[in-house]
Length: 290
Ligand code: CAA
Image 1 (tube, rainbow, N blue to C red):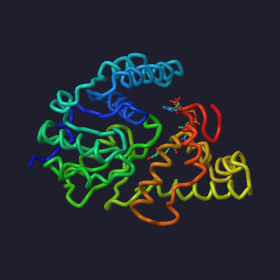
Image 2 (image 1 turned 30 degrees about the horizontal axis):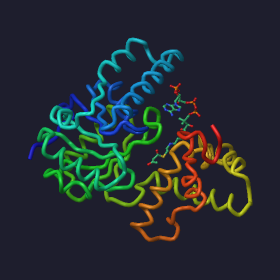
Image 3 (image 1 turned 180 degrees about the vertical axis):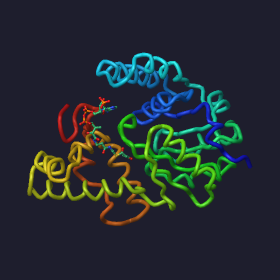
Image 4 (image 1 turned 60 degrees about the vertical axis):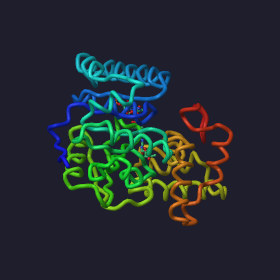
């Protein structure tokens, strides 16, 4: 068993080029790591590349990022459809693919065969504890959750979640890597549905949805209250639209399946919007129009 060390990390592989994967890849490249973002869809990769370039350009235009630093970061970032080759040269893997256990299971089994022995295999999943995929890798001690928040380029928190066989060396390396990526990691010592942030967010969302459904206040006024009384950067309805109503619904389904608690039951208002294709900002319509 090789002990993962922070200084041995040169190349990071991010699997999945959706909202989370693409920005996590950019975070790694901006922090100086050679980074590959891998996806089975070349179209998704092209979209991710265009989005990230536009974001960096906007930051340069605002004077928040030096043009040369942006160019250097883009130079460190490559996009690939080839998982096997990317895995073979990775020192650290962050999986941010579809939230489906059978797909993640296959990916982790492949990573276990192909990634160098020292590589840590982390999942960005917010709903699946890494213990569900660890055994398939043959290196369960080097597997954990490393959960970023949307938008990953901005949000400071990273939840690091260990499972019973995650080694202390792995935890230490993942926490330190998060710091080197400019984040503030928090450690969760036991897998629990929703970890910390989604449990807190879920409680506020449940209350907001109940107040709105009972006609006690409009969603606009509930959002305003969260911003002006509690100092939240966004109200709960605005935040659900940002995260994606499909993601909110999926998290609730996964949590409810695991806990069976009535409080975790998926919300019918959210499910109805998802059924209409109103997924939030990414589809142009959610609780609000964009
Ligand atoms: N992607 C990347 N960067 C973005 C962005 C996006 N979607 N939206 C805004 N930004 C950047 C802007 O470029 C800007 O950067 P600079 O300061 O360098 O210029 C910065 O964020 C601030 O943006 P704005 O001034 O336009 O707007 P704002 O001050 O309202 O901030 C926000 C936007 C950062 C999204 C802020 O509203 C916020 O923090 N909202 C709460 C987000 C949140 O709670 N996220 C957690 C979701 S839960 C989750 O992700 C977990 C899960 O499992 C579902």
